[in-house]
Image 1 (cartoon, rainbow, N blue to C red):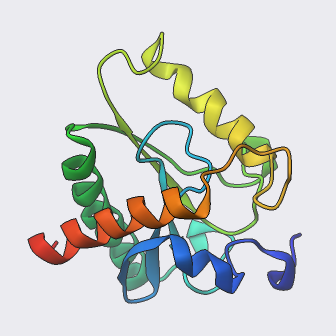
Image 2: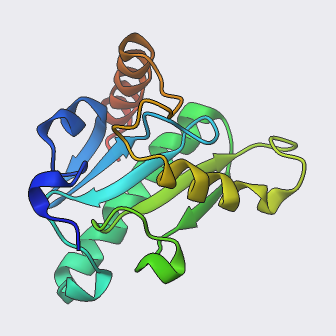
Length: 157
């Protein structure tokens, strides 16, 4: 089990990637997106499993995800997307902090529509702090996050 102190989603540096926040949850732009727009919905506190959420928290989690999705769809000019949430290593979870992947999709962005899932798994296995992981530079991340924040503020999602 991953300790909270070593969890990359609990690290304060994740705040630079937040483009939308509501209550106990936040939308974070992935620093190594598998496709443009790849983002994560994560709880602000260290929660490992969706089963730990109360009914109200579950509603807030998915409401945050829906609002972040609307921002991403507008920003990336599409109405297609994939969602993925894995629980435990057997299901592909590599970071023991609950998170939902949101991946906006465009026509022909990959050879086959289902090709995104292995990309997410490979992306997750290269931990956030790995020097081998291809990442956006700080300026690229700053520009994307600020664009998403602007869409959020101007559209009141």
